[in-house]
Length: 125
Image (cartoon, rainbow, N blue to C red; front, side, top):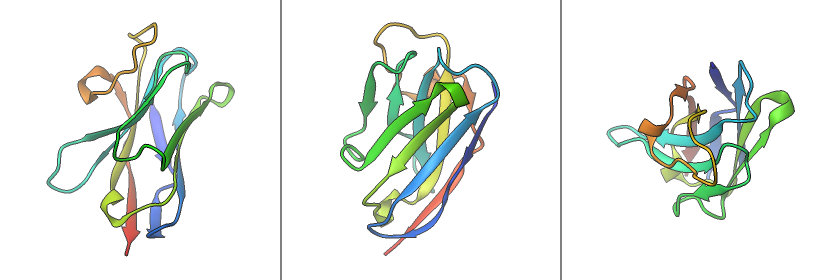
């Protein structure tokens, strides 16, 4: 499965962006996660779905500001980002994996086998 992110860019603090993650193959039975990595920092978990989208998890840093969604018919996932802050500046990655079932929502990067190339998000103050 190949993943391609789009929708990144430059936005002022307080603004919004929506990132998309288009998958090349079937998407409906895969866990989907979003991560970001700022310069000189480790990759940070943001939000994820379990394999069927029935369960979600969010990092405290983005809870209430970011919303994860998915359209299985389009093999596409989304990350809606509102009330953006300068500290949200980073490269954003989507990730997917087909090995996890039940209500488990993978929250760490090594649990995901498939990754997109990343999308730059820059928030100006």
